[in-house]
Image (tube, rainbow, N blue to C red; front, side, top):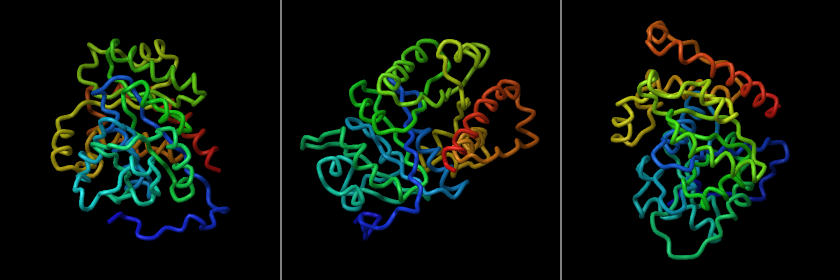
Length: 288
């Protein structure tokens, strides 16, 4: 049985603002965009009290349901694929960790029109504050995700081969006239041997809005099938995700704790705060 038991599509929504649709994209697997989509949805919901819908837009190899333990076919029997086939999207929405999720099917036999995604999401925009899309790294599957989004965030790791590949996603977005709101640099391991913010911004022409250090606690959170922002709220990753989410909400960042300021990476995590402040002001103005 799906999370929303009853749904009136004719409900009056004239006085309600429509949710921005934000997509996390990269034409390379393994950069962590699914994790970032989940963590952003979790932080928006649990730290800022926002109504959030997270959608697994990886049509051929979805993983959000696996990450969040939404794979019991008896309980989660309707998926995004069914909605694209014609079943009402409200039937495929399930609650998980404080936010709503639309998982995709691991296997689906019927032909679907992936470009219907934008239309069916538009019907949900007045019920949420944010809609978050995770995309496939597949070039063709990414196009309908970008088409449905208001803004995209390109996810990369801090090495040149991955950045160059990931920027192909930004090229698709520009071709489809979907704004690229920023780059998220994920899985930072050895800053002295990786591209820094200036190099990434010079190569891409896109502001870096978050830089996230790699951490072994990610494996623990994945094992327990819960977001890091819930599993370990005080973790450095959770802190950076919360700062990113605060910019999306247009609210100030939470000050760093004493021990955070002593971290050896502290000087590397400053310039993106300026970029987030610009994004924060833009998001605030758009939501007014």
